[in-house]
Image (cartoon, protein in one colour):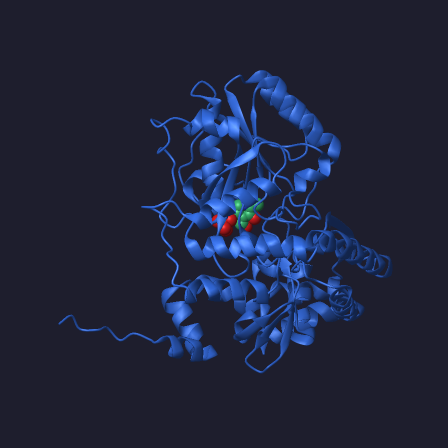
Length: 466
Ligand SMILES: Cc1ncc(COP(=O)(O)O)c(C=O)c1O
């Protein structure tokens, strides 16, 4: 008989305490990452439950979630309708893997996504992550553009995922490491229509352009309607296919189902992930215009070049997404994102007026909001220099790191940061967020900022050396 290794049970997993979790994380997951969790105080929290806008930690303390899993929690934590749909699916013993037979669940979800999407964005490929959906998006576009036009334009400070294909268009030195990347890409500044036109004009091999509609990792950066309309016109003129990455800004986050809908234009290919999984599962979709899809994979000979992956369209994930899309409209979450997002920005503008030497800019759309602080080096008083010298390099230019850690420790409020701009606090609360949650968040932030920069930094350093 094969001997059973020493395995932890489900009950033992749930009951692990913080020291043991830390030990296992370090031994088996990512010891380096633990270093950053410790800096921000995230290592002191074990989440026992999560419901709606809140996590609940080991001491029964509620933590208000303005991080929202980088946009993965549109419905909040454990939305009752999503839980019920999943439970019923399990109790009915439905099938999951959709490889042999057609899946009624995948078919219905594809129908729903086409119904939510403007124009002829009708053809859907399912995967399990944003990276996988973006890989599929770039592949369908590359095939439709044809072998004579293999070059892809992407933007500075872009983030499209970390798998090897999309890494070629993700603009982060950190993520690129020293991997060998392909050289058929052209990099342009985000929102710079002239640079794009020059690229299209000068290089007839360009067949595809890929852009996040709202750049998340760059620090919540938008481009005006004029840019998107000109982009659509340029793509039509030069026969270039536009891939809109809506993995983070899609599914209602910006106050429209897709962020590109603010600009009255439709891309050739798009991608959703994150909240498509209802905050409960991994689900992602590439959605292409029918004409583009048919060019790439429309015949029996080409149909299997990039057909469903093993877990693409898995049953319970599809059911979760179907229920999520229904909840999105039934509970008017897209409209709530627009109105509560406007309220959040107004309240943050109020704080900017109160703390002009700290806050530089408030920006965003719907409930995808960036709060940019002045650059550390310009606002930091001389007295703090020696204290700062003791800190980790990662934190030196980052007021958001200090503020985020105080918000969590002293007020039970969780915020996020951005990959490429360390001066920005990223706010992506669930779309169920109400004004009272915004008020709670603003009161907490106001209290932390009222301490002034010297105390904010000194308190932080004190907590580190303790
Ligand atoms: C805009 C964008 N595209 C792609 C991805 C990759 O998604 P995933 O982490 O699910 O692979 C992300 C993830 O943060 C994202 O924000």
